Length: 416
Image (cartoon, rainbow, N blue to C red; front, side, top):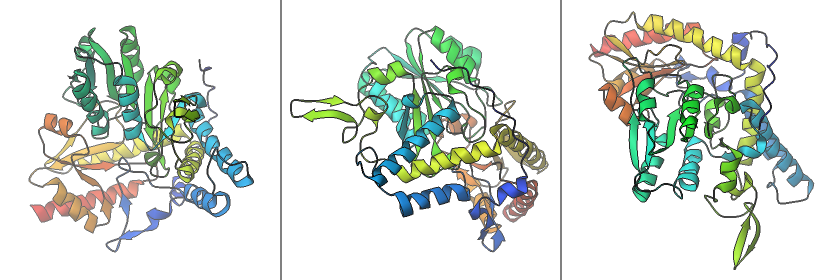
């Protein structure tokens, strides 16, 4: 069991202009214009401290982990396991319950193939919400095809919230697993995961929470959420690509067979059989992304130096400003208006295709995403083929929002 988390010390509100200077890429020009980066739900930008941590590892400490007794090997192992410990504290979980992997997609597949596949059978049901990213849909479909289990969809209300009464009614005795986003990557909806996991646990339903869009933007206490599995992606939280983690209850990790076999995940190998390492290492076959995880550890340090409460407050302020300005544009429709939503704005302008808008905005130096955002079932529910998505982060500014709106009005005029 985890001890209750000690309340974090209050961190003074940062100088946000100073914070912005920590991110080298934000000084770039695109198409001769100062970059306005509004695609942080896709990937977060990296502060100099993260870039330098990766560079320093390759320049001064490069060696494999958990294999060599020489100095470099010890330094690499200490830094790698140190990153695991930092991430565990960030999530308020035990380090020996945290599997380091390439990101949420790998983490959910690990649960699908190592927990679900050996257990599910015909007649069982997997309950998945309508707002899920493909990474929290497709693995369950693949498992269902192989086991005879079926997928049941938890639907949404008009403002993009989960229909909670319908969700709880859908938690019937045949449901063995619930897969749910903490924060929607399209709608920005923040789901009440603690309440939902409590209700699922009463019914004996295992819960898998996709925390990709939550970890970069709000303080997390995974132990308090009460889920069975929680997945995060490092590159969205100012860390390097190819990093992430799966937290799982200890009893699950002990019972689950390895997903991938190879070096480091074993204690002893003979042709008569193999004795596997303890969790979490039995799920970490092969040489990991050592530099990437050292960078992720630096990203955790950076986020905590800014303060997750400060980050959430800043992004809420930017969201309110952007929403107010966008709604002044004739013909603009925002998808997802759930109370307390995160700083993600998916929108369309009447008569303009999402890709055309995004292309014209790029000519003004504004980077947004257009398309289906790896959420085809959700966009089918919304009745649109694609949307534009502006996703904000604490390193954005109010001036950027004003310039984004001016650029969007210009693009709208060209497409009229």
